[in-house]
Length: 427
Ligand SMILES: *Cc1c(COP(=O)(O)O)cnc(C)c1O
Image 1 (tube, rainbow, N blue to C red):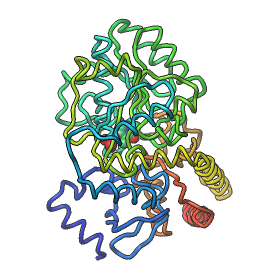
Image 2 (image 1 turned 90 degrees about the horizontal axis):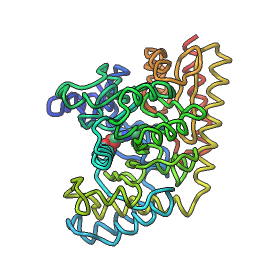
Image 3 (image 1 turned 30 degrees about the horizontal axis):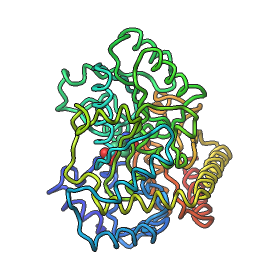
């Protein structure tokens, strides 16, 4: 038995499922997870001496690659001055100013500690600001694990086979309405049914927790129009897409304005950070200015802000990063399509910017239903095969592959070689 397997046994005695977040347990691929010791550039290293090209990238934050010196040094400097004060600091202001400068249509930001907290708080603000209770979300989109959003959720809430969660009272989720991603009609039907009751439409502008499913042409614009018509706020959950589709996020990428935007992952540079943002008029309804209460002992933590600020500043100063990672993902996606086609294996490879995911499915995958209909057993074999060939992917179909600036030509070639070997083994 390897070291990871032994650690996993020990872990399962003291941590539920051996992990602190369900997807890490590898249940969707029916294996024991790798226990990692360190990560550097495009690679992660495990307890058993293995080295893997990493496309998990901590689920998105490590857009510059692991252990980037600029971020590490910013953290090292910050640590010397103390870990937490529970008082305002200069870096929080600089971080918010930079976000307001880079992201369209936001004027104020509130920092929190996770994506979950960011979306939960944005929904509370949307309800407080509109005086309405209902919200519309999409089946297969994931917005963190707060009660009212654990309805028909994506990511590991889905891979675990439970569309929702035990412990969430019916009374709490009765205001959460679920529509279909890329189906404006399903949204309009709900708005028409509850014309004055919907506080917000909450969406991942690129669905990335059902695997990657890009928005259909006109879908996001259509949501904007429907929200305007029915007086609902449009909330973009950009916990993945923020600073990944470019420094302006999905609003800039698709040219659609959102009323509230949530962030996480990249803005923390690998530290636990989330944020929600919007117009001054909306954000000033948050405590202590307004009646929507939201607080956090460690919010705006100085070390976390140092990491996040360093990463965002780097991205601002190096816009070429986006052309590089998007180009890599685009070439990888088309390489994978060609290899699969040559081998006669049905695969739909979806890609937007530096997000991509292959589905083992016959047709295109433009909806949650299509994503769910893909061959999950084949994904599990694919995952295991790639790992054996030195490539670490998300251990579940309903996740994205993340490309970082540390992924270069060597990693590109090796990834496609591995893909070819694995796909050929399916024939
Ligand atoms: C990861 C994620 C979240 C939750 O963020 P956590 O930091 O894990 O709480 C929310 N929304 C989306 C779109 C995510 O991908």
